[in-house]
Length: 244
Image (cartoon, rainbow, N blue to C red; front, side, top):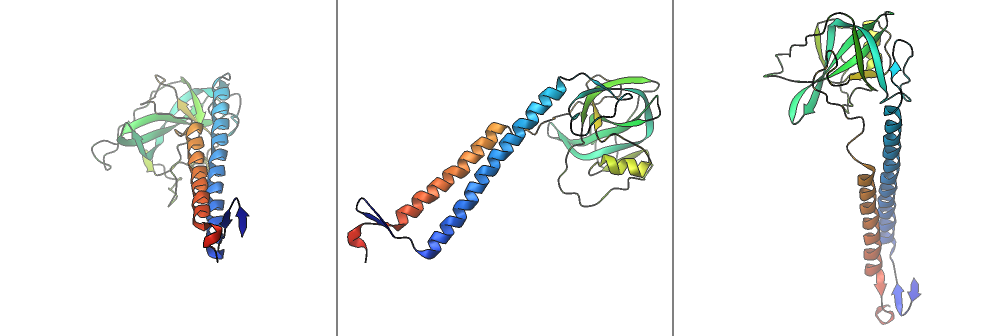
């Protein structure tokens, strides 16, 4: 029981325990959103720094999966005609389609996976799109990145398959490399527009939710915690003459 300025705060056990638990949850959610804002800002800062770096020459240096993500890079070699992989469930301007992944064999015999961009699904899922490739030696510029995240993975594709075109619900570069008996960098090269073999450019290196959005969500959770405190005090606050 707390007395102040003619008022008495007389909380009871179970409402108080409920208030403590709910407040802890709300404050935790607010702090989590602040952490997400810091992480997002760090990612944006890192992206900007890496995008400004000199292009990495891929037959001269192996890209670091963390430090070289988003960095511009140049690959030289010839497209491998088959197989090619279609990363499923990629929307572009509201239309269903795929991200198209192909292999490039460099002059030294090593390979790199290329994200050639987006292509429409077509009239039906049974009719796969045509995927012509340039022939002969090519020099290709782009940005290094991981394949798009697809959330929950229910089943692993057959990475050993050698059919010409394979539709896959997600793309794991390490698993694909092992299945195909190749050594591949952990990052794919996302082709810049107008590069040989490039399709519809569809690349977003950063999630669409900005740090400011996370700050806004954090403010909402903290505001709910404050509102809960006001309700808790209002319910349990009594005048001295009404107490027993």
